[in-house]
Length: 114
Length: 112
Image 1 (cartoon, rainbow over the protein chains, first blue to last red):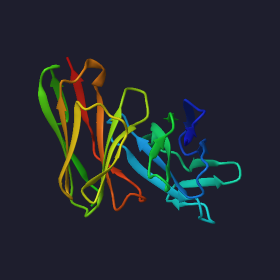
Image 2 (image 1 turned 135 degrees about the vertical axis):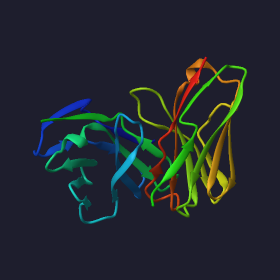
Image 3 (image 1 turned 90 degrees about the vertical axis):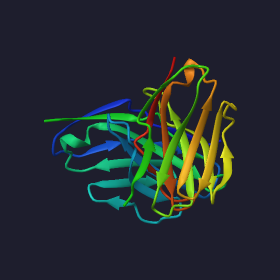
């Protein structure tokens, strides 16, 4: 069975600094995808970044980058130059391509301080 | 355009009511999803439709009944719900099942 773990219930970061949100996963499937989503207080889930299990390079999307360490089964999200609008709940998710089931971690609430 | 729309935004219903949630996307996506999210918890997958066929049903009680009339529309029919079914119901779509999902704003459901 798949399991996603986010060990940081809450994180604080100063505006304009970088922050890393942790995510570890457990799966026996060789082929899977890792995703990060942002959920502001309005409730909508916003797709941020994707990493495939066979991708050799870490994914980047603007200020977001994914630090993928396959041997350690970790997929940490790095947000550079934090902005006040980055304050939200962040979820790590994994989909196994064996059964296409999508599972989310418990989430990390990020607060950006001015 | 990465927009998924959901109606209504809010719904209050009694335990004997029948209501439906609606989800629509016009991105040509062939997979659509229903999730349930309780407060301060992650979303939980309920149903997956792929090419208008139900491909995943995560052991959801029969009082929730999904329907996919066409590739752009996804409904969730609700009947005889319980107060513990109160939650945010999120719809999502993706190009196919192994692509990133785009979510709608959700319907906040309260069962009284």
